[in-house]
Each structure stands twice: as structure tokens, then as C-alpha cells.
Length: 169
Image 1 (tube, rainbow, N blue to C red):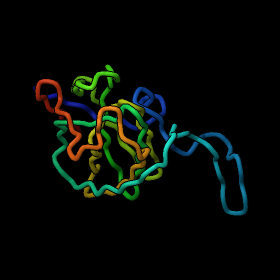
Image 2 (cartoon, rainbow, N blue to C red):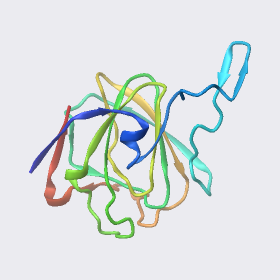
Image 3 (cartoon, rainbow, N blue to C red):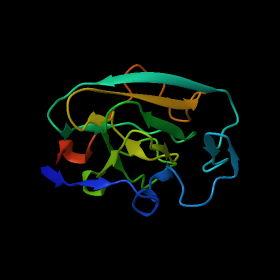
Image 4 (cartoon, rainbow, N blue to C red):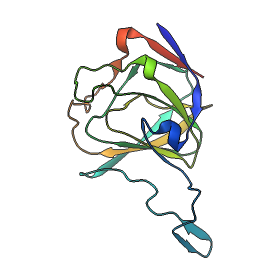
């Protein structure tokens, strides 16, 4: 079966079931100086081990998702550099079930603009991000520790229930 999903704008409220948003707050900065403003601790990444960072170049391609991965033991930070990206996510229904498959009926896709970032919660299913147009680069950060269900495998992708696909745009 094919599912169609619209891309949503990223807000704290819309992304709350999947994690946290990092964006310029409406509040006054916690520190200021000549020519700079600083907002300290606008979000927290819950970690107990060192964080490893990776870089992804995501190329323009058909907006179709067939599989996702999840990390049940750690959160993941995702930050776009130069272009808007689209991040597909799906709900984790049973975080303790090593055989859970992502459910395509729970997929949402969020537009992340340069200067914004997300922290994907433990267990949330996600695919690699897609560029909104052209090609894009993004960085991810995740605790450098083995996940409870071994997502450090070379191919951690799990197909949707029933082999379904999700199209967005």
C-alpha cells in the first residue's frame, strides 16, 4: 500500500511526539555582549557516553520512504547546514519490542530550515533526511554506544509493515 504524507513546518508543538526542536527562542537572551546574543541551554541532549558526530550529503531523489531505523537507547541530534531538509519520522509503538517494524500510518515529515535542529527521541523511527530541493548537507550527533537492539549493524533499516511505502511532498 502507498501512503501520502504532507510536509509540515517544524514547531515545538508539532514535533513534540518525536523529540525536541532547537530554534531561536522568543525569550530574551540569557547573555549578551557587543555584537552578540546568547541563549544558553535552550535544549538538552540526554547522554551518558561521548557523542559522535557524522556528516551526511543528501542528494535530490524521489520523495519515497520504504524503511526506517530507530535507536531505543539514545537520542539523536540532527542539524542542517546550508539547505532545507525534510525529515521523515514515525512513532515508536513498543520501544521494548526488538521485532517492531515502523508503521507507515504514523509517518510525519518535517521541514528543517538552516539554523534549526531537532533531537530525535529514543525509539522514534526515522529515515535519512531528504533535501527540500537540490542537494543538502546535515550533521548528526549520537551517543557512541551500542544500542539495545544492535542498530550499529551495517544495514539497520527495517521495512514498513507489509512492505508499504510513504510518498511525501
